[in-house]
Image (cartoon, rainbow, N blue to C red):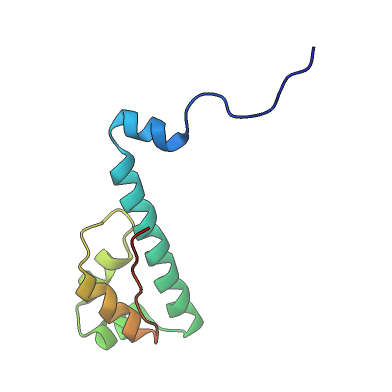
Length: 95
């Protein structure tokens, strides 16, 4: 007897939606990616958190919130300041 390989059941997104947590998971995933990109750029430039906070004209505590993947309440203004501080541009798009 041969078994066909393929999809079984619904997609993972459908499962998360059924559980009522799809949006939260997507927010956290996006935040994790942004935090990882900012951290990588800081490491590449050998930029400490204190120096990054100064460049962003913010506190170290605010930078820690930005880099915390579980904190999805970051403003666009903060993200733009972080991008500028590491010589990048923030680009958002709806898909």
